[in-house]
Image 1 (cartoon, rainbow, N blue to C red):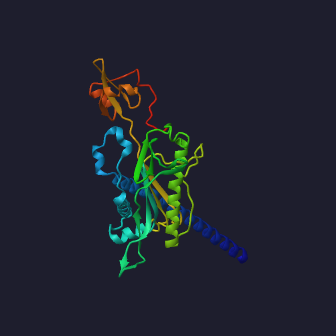
Image 2 (image 1 turned 60 degrees about the vertical axis):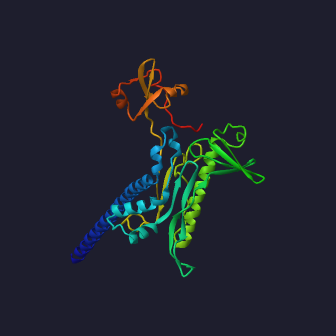
Image 3 (image 1 turned 90 degrees about the vertical axis):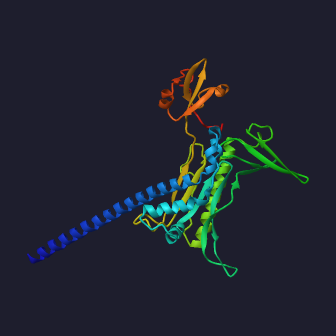
Length: 332
């Protein structure tokens, strides 16, 4: 009888241990999921703040029709990103914590319409004329989107079909520009898909190179990626608008979040479809941008963010155009 009593005690203890083990495993999984979700939200807010900081004050005077040609200044964006990370995790905003977070940033990239900036891990101190061993992320100069074809090296534009070619004639530099890939000089070499593949390749290669360079200096684990991380039907993954991308790895400040994986955060600027107002035959109409014919642009009097604002200003919907397809894409 005593033997069976000991057996039941042993089974009871084993059951309790299994339940406790299961409980702690589940709690650990829940905590990891929570910390990972918190890290993702933190990156989202921090990247958004960094992205807003790159737009130059010179853009205040830009015309609405020129929104694709925004001026960008990436200089303070990483500082903004690091400060927001500190605030989200309750850390003091000081140089020590900024440096700590910077060591978790593998690479950052800002893609503009006619070129891109990418961070480089560079020696930033010098002692008695000798290079020190302190490294920091520094933004590169703007690097153009270029395509080497038979007629020479041609500069590309991310958001439209503008192109440029620089050649040397004797002691003179000759710059030739065009607005469409149907231009006779480049029509045989460039189209929309070729541009997408080329620019995406340039951006991906630049990110990969800088990630590998950072891994060699910091001793991190190498990893591969492509952008964006979704395979499209056409097989072409592209960045089509002004975008900021930040890769964060080994984020050991994020609690139980998986810290040995890289987390990518990015934002893209797009043009907002606005309501355009115009007068024709003494009557006031509105419809959405791109719905009216190009020869009617001279009639435009005002832009509004919503149809409600246009209606309050006395404009009525123009049923000739209001049901036309809306599109702001200028890449055909």
